[in-house]
Image 1 (tube, one colour):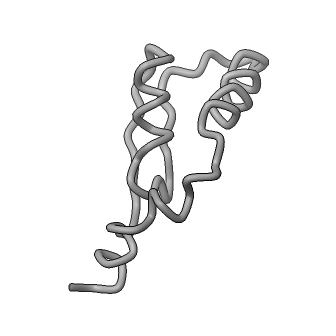
Image 2 (cartoon, rainbow, N blue to C red):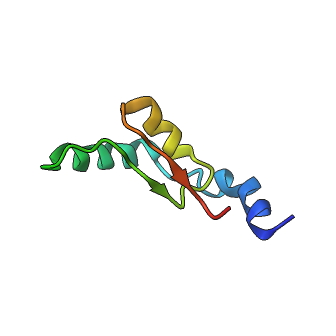
Length: 69
């Protein structure tokens, strides 16, 4: 098992105190202020994808996620 795989198994527990809804609200606020329509959002270093999944349920945009893990 690589170091990333072992971390991925514990990542959500380590980030349990992160308020993903607050992050999603923050991102949505900035997206809505953009003078250019935003159709695609790339989530770099998305970890286990918790925020990406939340974004999928909230915004009708393309939302690929990439993580080195």
